[in-house]
Image (cartoon, rainbow, N blue to C red; front, side, top):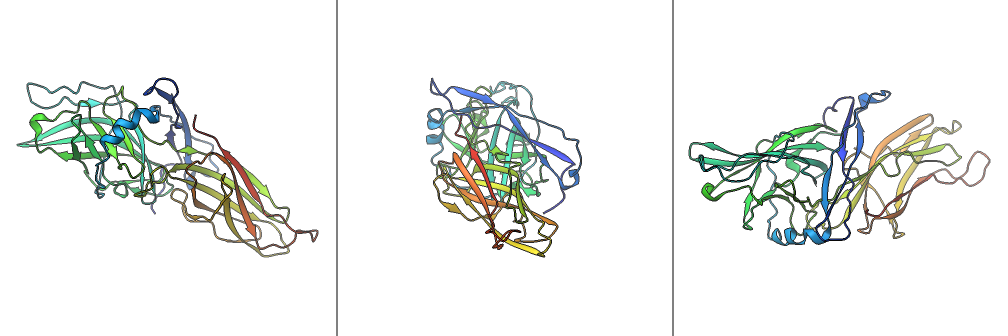
Length: 367
């Protein structure tokens, strides 16, 4: 779907952390992952960037979730953006009658849509004046988890939840395309119907509603963000050799929320897989893949959201096929997983029954 970003691109990720003790207390965790482009194959140069954010406990998000229960599902439009700094006051300037501009640090959330997953970092907010028209603008930076270019308009537009409980629907300023593995500025805008009373104080940027995976990013740096942070690269590098010429290896994984409408508290697992075949007396192997989940049910894959098309199910001798798979997994996703490569081989080189490669890994519970 478009050109790759530079040789090696890093998306900073924060592993979701639960809280214990006082309600509303937040914990902060930082990790990172590298998204490598095809042009980076064989290169050892990688740059690493990490980001940090606070994640609130389930009990502390109850009020915000209730306040946004009536948020309608909006339709996508478009967007561009800007980065970090320190938070300024949200007080109204008496001279201009316009809220003072804000700069943000560690305001990070995660959102998705049709075949997309993005990290969003707030960088600033301001009210612009054009004659009698005043427009609220939230500057953000969007990082694309996919290996392919994606439009931000695949994500439904957010709303600005004000301190009085009212909602200001926002639009994308432009239809911005974010390169695979890349980061792009995106502006969210809303024309103000009553600018005389508008203030950023106590406001939050809200994606989704109470029937879907919801991300709430307060515009105050001290307030915790409510979002599900993807868990990445669990099982990466796990391989299995059947002993009959077929070898499989996991080259990447991303566990993330399902952002479809009505898919509240459901999750999906993207897997990057490679399968090779080296049984030279035969010209090919034909295989299929299933995933056994912690509840002992088996799931068949669909096309990956993040890692591209599924691998070709026919692999020629001496060749390797690559591709992405997407699995719907149980809401209680923690536990043991087994990815089985079902081959059409019936025996190995000794004439014995051949075993299918099985790639096993465990997704830990939220910490």
